[in-house]
Amino acid sequence: MDFDLVLQGTVVLPDRILDEGYVAVRDGKIAEVGLGVPPAGRERHLLGKALILPGAIDAQVHSLSQKDQEDFLWSTRSAAAGGVTAIVDMPYDEGNLVCSAAAVKRKIDHAGPQARVDFALYGTVDPEEGPARIREMVEAGVAAFKFSTFGTDPKRFPRIPPALLDACFAAIAPTGLTAGVHNEDDEAVRTYMEQVKASGITDWRAHGLSRPPITELLAMHTIFETGAHTGCPAHVVHCSLGRGYDIARAYRRDGFAATVECCIHYLTLDEENDVKRLGGKAKINPPVRPRAEVERLWRKVAEGDVWLVSTDHVSWSENRKTNPDMLANASGVPGLEVMVPLFIKGAVERGIPLTWAARLMAENPAKHFRLDHIKGALTPGKDADIVVLEPRDSVYDAAASGNNVVGWSPYNGIRLPWTVSATYLRGEKIAEGGKVLAKPGTGRFVRPLPRQLIAGAEA
Image (cartoon, rainbow, N blue to C red; front, side):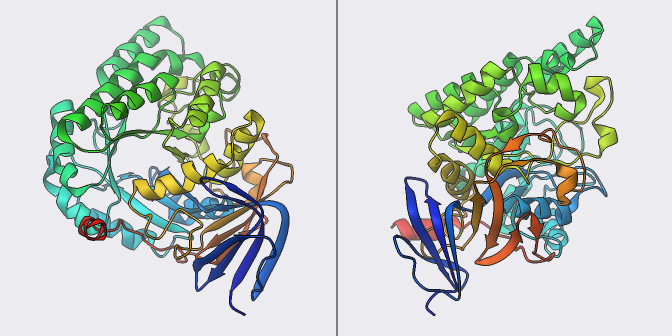
């Protein structure tokens, strides 16, 4: 037998869809993609109408935001179940800000024995140290850097003020890596928060009122102008507003590297129904917006203005998401197990080509983090990371699946027309029918291709 694994079904590529296509795998790598009668293989599955996509790369995961809570053991289990074959973990770990080569190494050593899927890492800076350790973190293997224009916590999630942001971008620019930034203007948010508190509003409405659209848009201009000034690729890690994607497009039109990520919650949940119903369990920064904005974001997907789709996954314990005072809750929601089927559902309902799923959740994230020499596509020579979805209705229930450290999810009760039936990492099946097969330690740390190798290949 020439191939180890052959899958036949509807193969979804970034630029086209192969009805009755097949993917063949040899030695953990994609060996062949074709149409028609599939070749023989040691393991061969004729999957009918099932969708076969490249495994997703979740560009934004917080595995360690709450100490002794989720960790990589659980985040990567949720990922495997949901067709996510690599995660990029954020640097804001409770008790360990990832802001030095030593911190990067500690995290790799910590995550490696737990991870069931591959993982890459973000780095950041300690505001008191500034950009001094950026170069050493690049050498330690970080795939990008993350900053915030808003201070969530002075130690774990600090604000990076404009002059320091400029200095950090300038230090990153020569490395070719991207600077990703949380986009909320600190002064504006604090002013609006005080106004909301003074008004006495504490229910579900308080969060959106405390962070109106202008707080996001002001920060986006700061981020992209800093990128334009320093020559550093500037990336906004989540934008809830159609207007934000227009701002990024204008910078790209002027020749700057300016990209925006859309989280799955902004494409799924809305303020007037879901936030009203869920309260603190739908508190996310920036906030979930009204339904009209959700539909505007799907139009941005169809127009090509969205660069990545991610989860911003974080599994806060329930007691940190159920305070009747909306602003007292932690911000963020879990989503790794359900991002891929939620995106497929939304695209199908709106007549948006499924090619966007392969592009926004696999190909573009691989390019973004300079992992595309091994990840992100069903292309011969790349890792055989594959997700299969069956046309089978299911109703999402985070507790029932058993793949989540918490039993709550803002997506509970959503009907999914496509269900993840199998996930493969480097050609090995790591999940089937919602059951995770991968043992801890199956996943590997993946790092960007060094810039000199890229330059050499282009020469």
